[in-house]
Length: 72
Image (cartoon, rainbow, N blue to C red; front, side, top):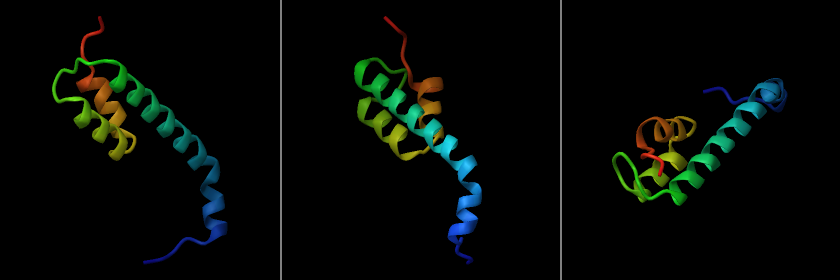
């Protein structure tokens, strides 16, 4: 297995920084929604917090598509 050098990593930084920022914004937005709204299509609050936090990038998307309950 080959380890990336610092120079190789720096080459990818212009791509990685926006992806990391997008992931953090999605995660924080989903967590705020999970904590403020008690109704979910399935699962409970703990389930969705774990999904949003530990399944990077896809977790928040899955929550907004499948887990978010009806707005009141």
